[in-house]
Amino acid sequence: MIHIKENKCDFCGTCVAVCPVDAIEMAEADLKIIHETCIDCDICVWVCPIDVLESRVNPEEEEVASD
Ligand code: SF4
Ligand code: SF4
Image (cartoon, rainbow, N blue to C red; front, side, top):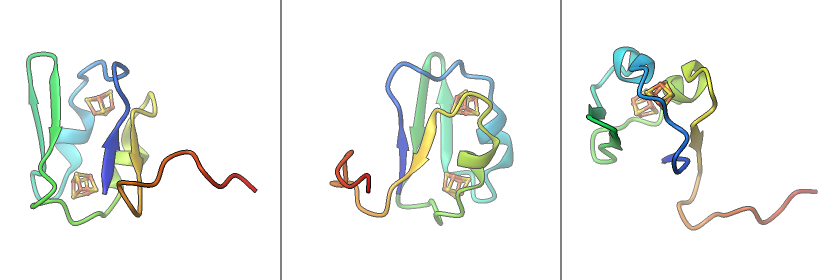
């Protein structure tokens, strides 16, 4: 599942352009992942120039294990 880090996106549109299934919606100052459509390919995570998106196996998973 793709997680959007709060207040980091600059709405460049790169992730929207590369998503193969159009699962990212960008409106004015608002970015949204359509989780029902997303196939978890992680392409958007790789292309974001400022590291806004991250892939989480479990949405409940927060910064827990680090070692
Ligand atoms: S993980 Fe893949 S399918 Fe999901 S929003 Fe990102 S680019 Fe689209
Ligand atoms: S590529 Fe990154 S900065 Fe650009 S719109 Fe997507 S999440 Fe925002």
